[in-house]
Length: 162
Image 1 (cartoon, rainbow, N blue to C red):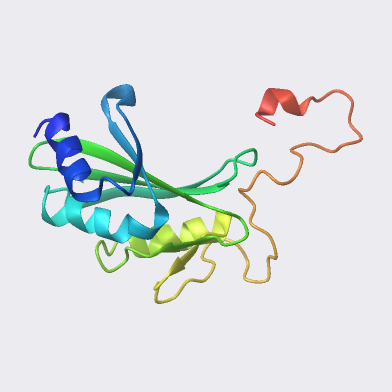
Image 2 (cartoon, one colour; image 1 turned 135 degrees about the vertical axis):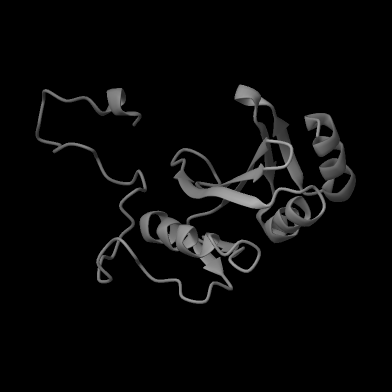
């Protein structure tokens, strides 16, 4: 299946929900509104044959308005085609709909993303921490804290992406 066919199918069905489309590193990347993520994932699975959720992970961009993101990597095993779907939300309302009932593997991936980034997947059956202790009151993968001790003079956070 050609990437142009995938793009045209998505544009035809979800034209108002697609924010951007990019083809970086030979993988089609589509950024969408968070309120349609379930519909797009379901469409990709049922209509376009992307039947394998390779990965679901979180990202944090502290300098952007929509700071928290979720990235979905899907694979069409029949045509050996991959697609990346991105959606973003705010820190104040970090909610994105769960896709655990579309792909059962998303269950643990969503829990991991919640555990490290604080993204709340609405509709998830048991959204609890799985790798960090349950009493942890922050999300360790967010870029909210300095990487090094602020009293050190031999380190510069600019070299660590901050």
